[in-house]
Amino acid sequence: MELYDVDEFWRFDLRVGLVKKAERLKRTRKLIKLEVDFGSEERTIISGIADRYSPEDLEGKKFVFVFNLKPKKLSGVESRGMLIVAETEDGKVYLLPVPDEVPVGTKVW
Image 1 (cartoon, one colour):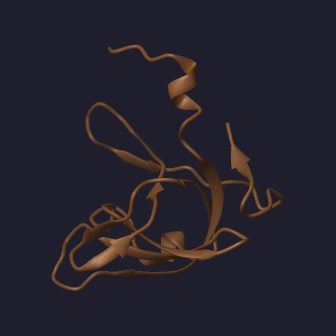
Image 2 (cartoon, one colour):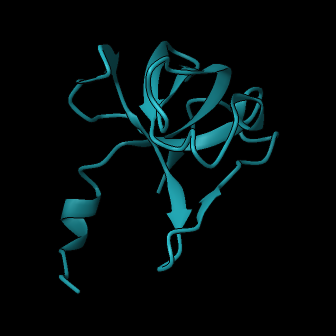
């Protein structure tokens, strides 16, 4: 396991976002397009969990996202962030919902 200085961790801007809409991307097995509200703005974020979760599992729920990643095109759609999930060594993926009382846009550390 590689170790990092805590200052490197602080470079990431983690925020709570509310998934307003989720839909599978056509012609892909793994990609879900999320429309996420961060309070000050909405962003499109693509997540590779469609083979494990349906759009209905995500819509209307709050999760933690990496907010300051460089945009990247996935299957022709620009993604402007990343959904944080947990994954076991055997590949099982878990969503990490945020309690309803936490406001969208809240920084996570």
